[in-house]
Length: 268
Length: 271
Image (cartoon, rainbow over all chains, first blue to last red; front, top):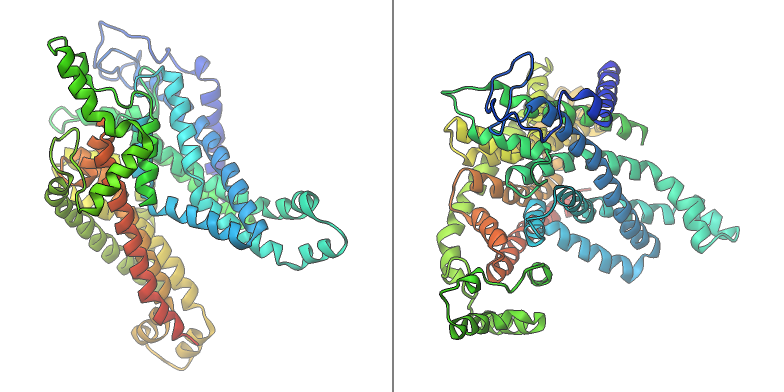
């Protein structure tokens, strides 16, 4: 089944390239409105048709993919960093510090993730500039998504601190920051990488949920969440199957991440 | 309690907190505006809000919702059963399908059913809960089933991996070698060993179902506490948000504690 993973990696790399070069690949800008062509069906000019404001759907899908696909890894990096700092420090310190930090982590985990996210996102300003809304959404995902990863990293750091290599390092005079930097962090790298890869599809799906509920990236900037919101206007009587294009792309992309993730788990 | 206060602190620190849109109504006199501000004064100081809230809570009063203008107890009494129904149906469906298909996947030798179930679970893992809810609205299907579809893939994947691991344990292989049938091996040798971890998963799945209930209730227009939480967050209703955060946290902790209590005696009985 290794070839499927290779296909997934190639697909993700291709998609990332399209996102990076969106300006050259997309037929139009995401905000340009063809006022004379609202809700147009797919044609040679607009391959996925236009939305109710006459904006080219394919261009919006490409730019929306860029927002979701490039910022989810950034949020995953932030959350993994928080998890490494909090979980790693707790596992390394042990004792009452670990107990207190893990109690706070349990409190975070006992709140349903989407509930917490919706509450905190709704409390921040809703009428903000599109770029600010992108920053707020993904920074929130990064800041609130650390708890589960911190638990895993704490457990790993604790095990590592009791391992023979750390014991030998301590015996040979290594301690404090040197011990942490030279012996613990490098050995935690596989689990950190696994947590990073696990977080990306989770954040992509969460942004989509927030976007559909109107708490994601602000218009006119597109994201998968805001593009999927168009499904609200879908009717079986006036079927417009091209409205499902963002959903298909989302499913394929998240599936590819899951496939790559399994590969990473094997490496870890 | 701490979860509720964390929510309240975030609300209190949010930009625009304490400003009532009614104050912008040009028809209101200065006296009326002052009266409105006075009504919100108990919330202006964080410590003041907590003391006021705690004293009310000690008397069994959960406060009055600012956006619904109704006592929170009444709102919860109306809406909590609806969410419980949604979550219960979702959990029952998710667990029944997830566990049954995991058992089939582990026990069946052909593997076709397992492959199909695996594909379905993988597909469902890639669809956001809100999109599933929207699709159910379009198809005019009961929205409550969406929670089941969100819970199912997690149960299936976890249960299948767990059962596969336990099915390869030496005592199971010995039982098979001695000629024990599939059902006997499953009931006597695999499930009892896997039970503690499955019960622990039950606690986690409650939290998952509650989280899924929010988009489902909002998009399918089901009047439960998920929808209430959504409206409270949008309307920045401090009292309602604190109460809901506390209740959701309490329910999740209760579910996890119950799972722990069930798991402990089983775990203690293991060799």
